[in-house]
Length: 418
Length: 186
Image 1: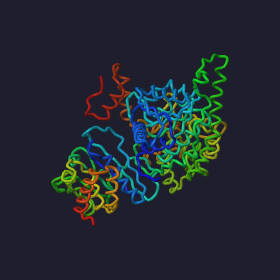
Image 2: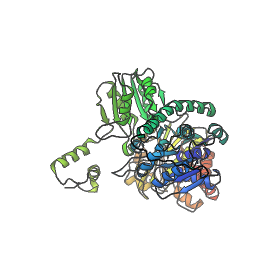
Image 3: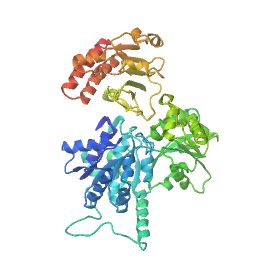
Image 4: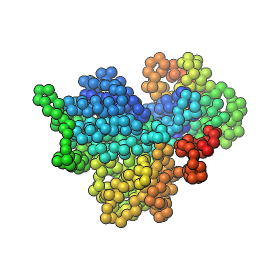
């Protein structure tokens, strides 16, 4: 049914359609509306036979989901930012134990400095935990990816994170087609666990494994991701035939097949990139876009196929690896090993900074004319940066950086530390 | 594409206003995208929300920099915020106030825009009359529909009822109707 609805609400309705048996809820902005929405659907009786558990922390939220999943229940939770960090140990455990939990990440920056707005640092911090990570470009795709996520998770016995941009998607009202129960039931069979804690036939899950077998267990975790690489396009194709629209998959291409410059990104910024591509195409630029949906497993072959004809690749990334630059670009380079390409990193949208067409057009043009550095930060305010650098150089007790930068931006807040 | 920016103060309902605009546009079969500003939101602090309306899918995710219309929920914002920032030359401005443009100090700015494109409506007073509380959204949306011709009153009413089912919605619909008629809507 077509609706004009908040992204979080649409996702909550999609979760209910997937009939989870245990939902663990702990609030954190910008994810909170999702679990609140699921809670309302449980209370209203729309989602039946579901245990909705208010827990005391994010660590508990995922730990309860782990216990529920190990007992054979379809389990779901959602978090963001510091919440994901707080549950980090459980994140690795869920993957290590092979439990098919689905978790939404309402992507948000990580402090310090504290910041509640969108970027991808949270998801990136656990990219190598063994979870599958899927990034949604629109709220429609967020809905569709959750339905596919349960199917995928249970097929390969691996937890799946569906990442959607905080505020930009979670808080946006837009048109979403929320499917009907019958179609979802036809696509998503009842959960048949490959392992289950059953008092009638007891065994343990979570053995201690020493040096003699640890590498083998870890290899099997890698193998599982490689299996997911095969399954993700198959599930997306089945989804398209069942629901009548394309959603998900490893990646999607937009005017990129003949493009000299290909812009690669994750999540909702691909929409703004597509608008920029259209405008630049109209001006005669040879440019296109590849939107990566599956970041883990990373689609090395599909990406190589999608971009190897290009002269240059620009990765627009909402996260920063300090001391390195771009995480996505590093992965893209891995896909292009042996091919002589320039791969640029544009760090953008950190802590919720808007990413505008004008700024994107500027960096894409500079990439095409060979004027772009390997790592570029979009729209940096060099005045405040240089003031802080000079202050730190000249004064030993130069004070806290974040506060100094705020004061340089807003002189009304008072003078920086001396 | 039409882009609308709503200025208000935290707690006045800029987000709800943008959401209802988008629902009204959706009811008319159009694509719409409403989203909050990406700044600090505190009770009473200046806040902004956005709404885009188009006949095709809206992919753009940047904040609205050059709006076609601006709705100002609180005229005291003129002192601290440039609500006209980036407004297109033939854009619309709707201000919640019972005072004239001269008294609001925006008469000179208003002359830059086509006749009738800058207006004030006492939306808070209309809301107090019908709803019993100073909630100007519904009246502003009714006025906006009449002034710009972009939305039908019936769609605005439907959006209000969807957001506020029951008596509160009905009272808000009454406020929207009065403001629509005041603005010359038929």
